[in-house]
Structures are given as C-alpha cells and as structure tokens.
Length: 117
Image (tube, rainbow, N blue to C red; front, top):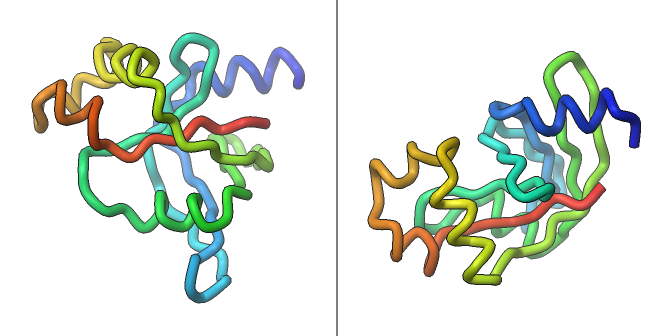
C-alpha cells in the first residue's frame, strides 16, 4: 500500500462502503464514518441492528470508497476485543458516539468491524 493511500486512510472520516446484501446478493452502498485508531481502520456505530453490519457478517468482502475516487477492496472482521473497543470509543474523534450513548454500552454492544486491505 502506498504512503498516499495510508495518508488518505488516516485522514478520511466520512467515506462510502459497498457491501453485498445478505438476502438480495446485490451491492449496497452507504455513507458512513471510518476511524483510523491504533494503526487499524474501523467502522462502528451506536448499539442496535445495522444492515451494513449484518451484510458484512454474512459476506465480509467489501469496498471502501475514499474521497477522490479511490476504491479499495477490503475484508471486514468483527471486533470483539474489549480493550481495543474501549480505545475506539474513548478516542477524541469518536466523541459523537459518547454524546449519544453511555460508554460501557458502546463498548459492550456497538457493531464494529476492522477493515483489512
């Protein structure tokens, strides 16, 4: 991976992802927030069912669409490690989530995947 791609991954926050619909098998593209934390790239959200997460559990292949038209194929892996989840939800850049939901609930129940390129 080039340094330019790494820089884009570290700086991008609002991105688009394409998953494969778990029932339809059709591509599903959505806008979502991505975070680079501890050298890892994650997508998460507040607790509750999320179609993007269910789609990635059923088929972890995805495409990350970065600003500027760069599309990166990736594989999504669910994140269950409590320490890393805490690092994600206590990072300054994830303040939006803490303003909506208690930190312990975020750590325990939020959907979260790491993207591997």
